[in-house]
Image 1 (tube, rainbow, N blue to C red):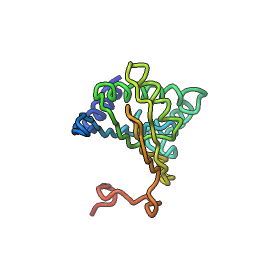
Image 2 (tube, rainbow, N blue to C red; image 1 turned 90 degrees about the vertical axis):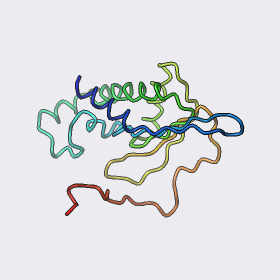
Image 3 (tube, one colour; image 1 turned 60 degrees about the vertical axis):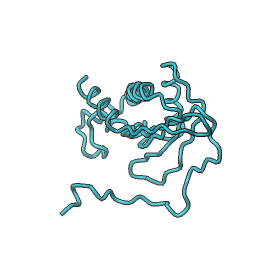
Image 4 (cartoon, helix red, strand yellow; image 1 turned 45 degrees about the horizontal axis):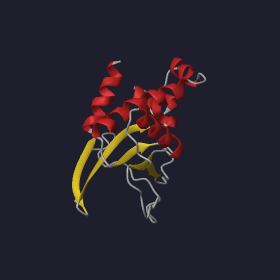
Length: 166
């Protein structure tokens, strides 16, 4: 339970919020780091290493049980959905999310809380190590959506990675 509380607190700290006036109407835009909100790597949200080689046999057995990963993903989606509900922005940019299927499930979870984001776009990612994507949920129609940026088809190492700092 304490891990879940910490995860929600971290999500709240990872939120950036902007309100602007657009054509006489206010538009509330937020960004949210969902921190491994993807089915493939959701175990990181529960304190496990990204690389399964670092796990104990017991951890591998538990996470390989049929339905276990899906249940943890739903649990994580509920926590992220609750944060998005509290933000209640018109447009939410999400980072560290899964593919379109994962984002659609998050979108449905948000809807169960009474907040509707009928429009979504999931950007194509070539990050084969983590499999993370970036997505946008919007209450307003999204026009001219580009799901990739030509010439940016690689993943740079993080410059603030303590393992690579001198």
